[in-house]
Image (tube, rainbow, N blue to C red):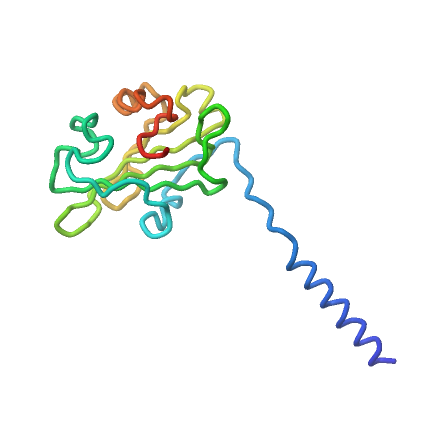
Length: 178
């Protein structure tokens, strides 16, 4: 009797295990408002999608518009753009906007040794932030460690950023994402 009971328990445990292992993993929930921090910048060059670059000087699709922005006149550095969304695939919605949680990082590296010297970041915030910020993007500068140095949480604070990116309104202010 103990052997029969033991076998029934083993079969039950196996059924439970198989059922638990075959359940689909739920998709991550997209937050209403996404605030990026330094912890979101882990593994950028190794795990994120490289979507543009490296470019030197005014080379690249955005080069002629950059002026002095993004180190475009400094031929001792390269510019490389990476993209990621921790919640969903990066694809425009029906209104042509990228989803909340989309992050674009542009690193500036010294050409001589590929060390990061600074960077820039765009973060699609959503929620109440997007209600007060017409672009929906937060504009951020990065320091040499690749961490957040300054946040420009309004379009007026990021006037220089928005001024150039406004020419790409039809692409949700992005020069690099398609």
